[in-house]
Length: 176
Image (cartoon, rainbow, N blue to C red; front, top):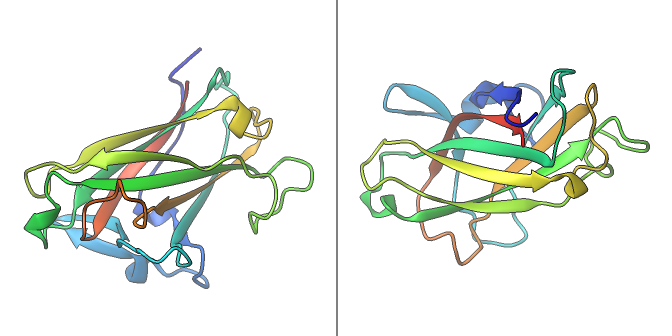
C-alpha cells in the first residue's frame, strides 16, 4: 500500500558527514522561532556538504514502487534576494543492511536523486520539496533494513539560483 510513513525527521536527527561526534550547534540555525539545519550555497564542485541520517524501515511499510523524501525548507530570513528563487537538493539512499554495505557510505548506495525547491516569495514561509526515489535506486531495500539517507544542497548546479542559505526544518520519508 502506498503512502505509509517510513520515518519522519527533524534537524537534530542529522549529522554533518565531515564532523566528529555531536555537533548540532555548528550545523543548525534559528529561523523565526524554529531551529533548522543550515545548507549554504556551495558553488565549488569539490566541496560537498553532506548530512546523514539512518532509520529502520518498519514492517508496516509494504515497499511499492520506491520511496519519497519530503523536505520542509525555508529561506533563512537574512537575504530578500533569495525569495522566490530555487534551491536544488539531492538525496542518496543507502541500504545499510545490504551485503557489503558499510556506514562510511562506500557501498550499498543507490543513485543520487535531485529536486528543485522554489522558495516562497514571502520570507520565512516554508515550502515542501518532494524527491521520489524508484525501487531500482534502493539496492534491494526491504522492511526491517537500515535505510541511510545522505542529503546535500547542490549549489553548483545552474538550477540553484538562490544565493543565500536555505534551512531544512524537517521532513519525512514515505512509501510510494
